Image 1 (cartoon, rainbow, N blue to C red):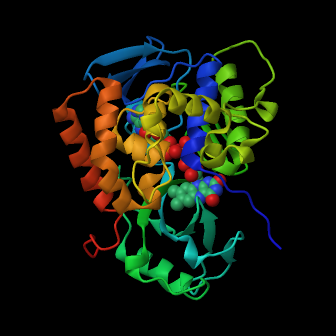
Image 2: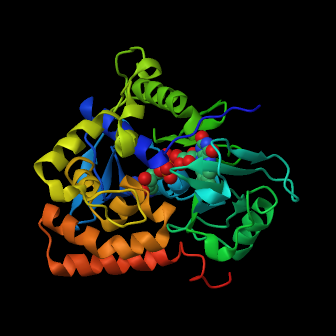
Length: 369
Ligand SMILES: Cc1cc2nc3c(=O)[nH]c(=O)nc-3n(C[C@H](O)[C@H](O)[C@H](O)COP(=O)(O)OP(=O)(O)OC[C@H]3O[C@@H](n4cnc5c(N)ncnc54)[C@H](O)[C@@H]3O)c2cc1C
């Protein structure tokens, strides 16, 4: 038997961000770096960033700038030096989600050799079946990657040989694509410390880039990055605590927390919220497991600013049931508007842009690529 671990990537990321904030980090959401600043000595000493909500530009000074922007790594490196060769070779991966009846068990299926030599997984995930993935080289990095028709067909054709029943295209609840920031072989520029599957690169200007790697190795990546940054910033040496650091939400009894188990210890304050405001117990959609309390919590405690934040990256509504997320959009946007003090125009814009994006996750709304 083969064992592996599984998790919810967005939830772990939110809890990591909260852990960082609790330990003194200042987090900025919807703030885009548009340039880097340099001192008279040519060393990078900060970044220029735009607050995408207010449109205001800020200059932020820094002893060390760490570029950890995944698929966008090269766009930041080019802000330092237009002439650098790309380090990233973008590769698209697509997943589809079916309901649990296609994989009615607690074990996952791994297909080690598909007909074109790839690996395919079918995994029980949030009471659904998650099937993927593909590995499609992309010429360029796009902000909203979209599944190609042949990727969907490949997943359906392969999965039907192994699942409990044959999935039709109309059985797909959601389709989503991501870009893996794979590292090319090194260019000739200066210091590169290659460590297992991630790369740390330090440019002549002092810009430090960490790229490649996987979620599986994120603590090791963090340790390497922080140790290099501390050295570059000439900080006092001290051991990195990540190996044994408990992250936000740590809880010994998560299995007793019912539907809110994914929040770990945050399940308790969310339950308190429902006790104080019982209408928040209502679900956002009959076919989705999420309550209005989780929307309020996302806005109040997890920096959710847009409908997409709540329906895709705080809850996983869009990934589990794209049509359900579209149907829930208006109700969720109205609740968010109340929490954030926004008006009806904001609600309309949010619903419109979310539904346009979410429709691309539906199986039958897609043009053939
Ligand atoms: C299909 C697929 C399957 C995968 N499967 C696995 C797996 O099974 N196991 C595993 O361990 N890993 C897996 N991974 C890999 C893992 O998800 C990636 O390694 C990881 O997401 C990359 O993390 P990152 O932090 O480097 O980049 P990202 O998660 O892409 O984060 C980069 C961040 O930088 C921000 N950013 C970019 N440009 C700017 C700018 N100018 N200003 C401000 N912010 C900016 C972006 O908004 C984003 O938030 C998979 C990835 C994909 C795509």
